[in-house]
Amino acid sequence: MRTFDFSAIKGPLGRSISAGGRSVLYFGGTAYLGIPRQPKFLDYYLEGLHHFGLNNGTSRNNNVQLGIYKEAEQAAALRFGAESGLLTSSGFLAAQMTVRHFADWGQLEYAPGSHPALWLKGKPDVSGSFEDWGLALVNRINRSPQKRWVVVSNSMNNLFPERYDFSFLEGVVREKELILIVDDSHGIGVLNNGRGCYPVLPSQEHVKRIVVASMAKALGVDAGLVLGPEILVGELKNTEAFLGASPPSAAGLFAFMQAEDIYRTELERLLELCAHFKAGLKDLKSDFAFLEGFPVYLSANKNLAQQLMEKQVLISSFAYPDQFGEVLNRIVLCSWHSKSDLDNLLNILVSCA
Image (cartoon, rainbow, N blue to C red; front, side):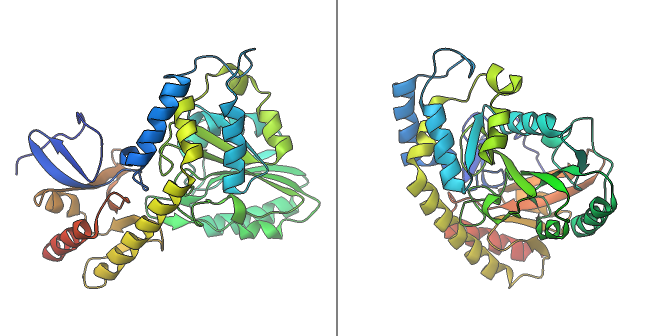
């Protein structure tokens, strides 16, 4: 079979992409709500470009500031159910800045599978299931003389996929103080009616919650976001990393602020597609792992990517956790797909079973 290189595509990603003169249906990536190709969102972005220009290279402690940054932070906090918000140029910066600032506040603990953006000194030495880790952690916290703890985790595992339940933290005794830092890059905009994990994280007087996220996935904006209590977010706004770094594009934030109805409509469309695809999967013998309402489907068929490529369908396929790991073949739905795209894919999957 002739191979095609999709590592240097010349145009935007979408429901179909082209390389070497060949066009294929594309079921990969993280643009769950199809924002990079959403016409009205692009109109808002262009309006923002005309209003604010291409970029803003000044730091957040400069004596000249664009007011949209504070406005967008307030809008994000309101939209996702937090007391306060903070914006950076990337999700990686948001995560690193947050973990570095609070790492010495208490004893630092990582959950299994935490994203590299959350790491400080290489991959944390922790393994096993999330549930077992959580139960063991609560037991260790309650038995330890250490009063303050910082717990760092993803909100979900988007690869396998799995959504994490943090209710185990309700078992932490009230004599302890805990800051929970959760990376919700793949959940925000999609799960919990688009609000992400912040509203459903444990909310207790002795457990403070902070969510960090990349806005470049479902939300379609090249920016990083921190959500949390005003006092903790205020601390982050006084760090060198926040004050010294250039902010994200104002144009993207302008579009984000105008696009609440767009996000809602695209999420509704995505959930309809997920329901349609789930119904079609019932007729297949193939084994797929997926979460209700999340558009990622992990296949147990190790040859699926190659089989689909022969039918002009490209999916997400790479080795995990490194180049020597097992290849993960995942089908990712986006709101830019149509039901006919899914029917075409389902028919091909039948032939691959």
